[in-house]
Image (cartoon, rainbow, N blue to C red; front, side):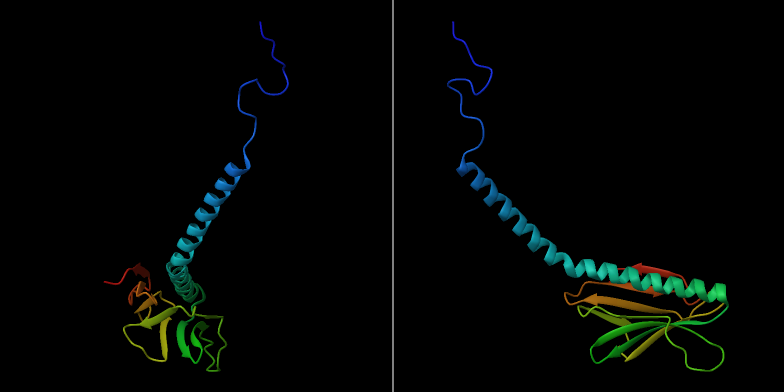
Length: 166
């Protein structure tokens, strides 16, 4: 009859643990997989930025409409083309005729292009009035690959609809 010790390994079985070769192979596989994930994430970056920016613009437009109704003022959303790209701004009408400062001013990411109503003018705008209506319009946001979203502002209700351009 054989007696086995309680500590250590059973005679004839492989040693506990991994060999150096097994550890190196696993590390190589992990390195290759993480490299592929990095490539896929960087490839999708443009579309993620497009979706995020479209949500930002629509949030600013909804805010402008709700503030126009609650404060009984006209709010104006403006997109300006400048030397170094596009900027979007939000203004509230002062009612006194003096020049107003923007409530919000942010640059449009360099990778994106903004076109309003198919017009490529230097300054584009949508106004929101105290009754909830607006001047209306369509804002198209595109990335360099040609993918994009269309934000439609209803002239009568001032409400937004976001869709993919056809």
